[in-house]
Length: 348
Image (cartoon, rainbow, N blue to C red; front, side, top):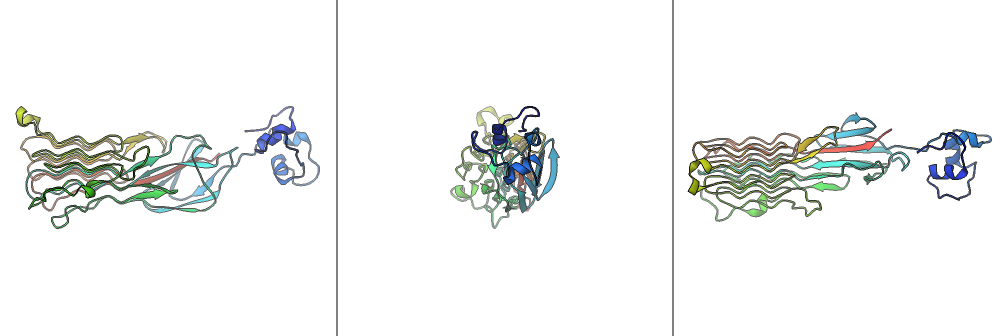
């Protein structure tokens, strides 16, 4: 706000200083002198015309860019967001955020059939908000943690590809669940707790998909993975939608068979233009001449196709899940995409 440029009342000054109307004003008080820009001597009402008490958040950290009146701090790796001035309601006193965790690693396949695509990293955000409607900040250094993508799996550790969690401003997002693995000998059931995550990993062929939103947040940080079917892994869940099931379609013949699609991510314009994050990985297919599942929009890697197809890695700094591998690529396992943190606020 700004005080009137013409006739002005003491209540106009109170409102500008965020003081209740009707409160008696001390013209010698420091806030009044600061608003009038008269450090000493007498202050007249004309000194208080067309003046603003707006103060804005100032901070440093990450890669800094601007979008109009807003400053954006982007963290592609862990760091520190340091607030040097907390601002006030007349200018800005809060920030918006996007916190994306690392996507899970796609499933390994060491025994035929096909593995599931990995779940995307959890995605949490507060955007858009007015300048005073986001997350309040104070003058301090806030640690920022950016989770890595789930590491490639191997035959000796086939269920250890979950993504790393991300956090900033006391907001946390959970790493994506690993894709369902196909190993020899088959375990009776895929370890469901390891396929859970911000978004759940897709089930192996055959097997159940993992549960998303493991943090129990409202709104949810992600979605469930799709189930696998004979020959086809399920798609990993994405930030915006669950992965689809692998399609066996025995009654329809081989043209109906395919790996599950990775769930699409969520579009957000916090960086200044609409971008998708947190896409799930596509499921692999172990059936000849049939398509693997595609990765979800937002960095999800596509699945691998028969024979010996390798799933794609999740895209770096999107939280995308890795794609599931196809028949027996024992040394070929896709990793998840690393996460990202973005903080935005009005700076002028």
